[in-house]
Length: 258
Ligand code: UDP
Image (cartoon, rainbow, N blue to C red; front, side, top):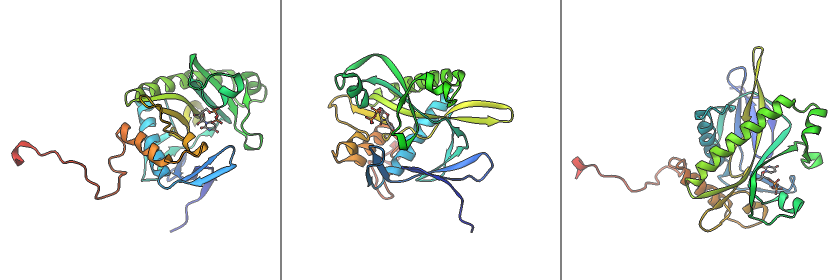
């Protein structure tokens, strides 16, 4: 069998040519990186968890009418996605002050923001993904004013959806990063949510204890990274068949078996 063609290898994922034109296979690695690739590790099982969590979130988004690149999950580490042209921006939505905004604006870590704040970062590793304004985005043709509008309204819908989803399982959505792509269908083009949505790209705090359940555990050398991701997956109810064959929970006994 011919080896399938690798299209791109990123820090946490690999893209392969898909089975049909216009599709790709997105493979989730166990690699973790932070601080613009200066810190690296392999966290066993992370890719499997992120594949499942991102699938769950993308399916939920589709259900509320937010278009995404996701088609279907293929196996433990791979999903079939639409081939899109990635817009070179990281779109961050923040509800609570944490991370870079705390330093930049002198805010108190954990303070609720007066409203959800959207930021754009230019995707460029050599420059360390700098924060940019709409002026830069349009001047350098990274996206049009219409595309910026579309991304902002989609980002807020994603925020509402995610905030509700996580609140329901006792998790506070502090902030997250998403990426968008242009999907071409004949003469038509639409903006869709691409990449992944997982604890690698969100800040998630346990509502009761304040415990960190996201990649900050890796950034801050706190340990227990995959355990925290596993707990996020468990609370979302996506863990049932990730837990290895043979691991059986309590079995419900029906009346006629008693
Ligand atoms: N984020 C990400 N990839 C990046 C930068 C940030 O997924 O390359 C996420 C990060 O996990 C957090 C949010 O975007 O949920 C905001 O990150 P921030 O700007 O505070 O940067 P950081 O403190 O992570 O450097």
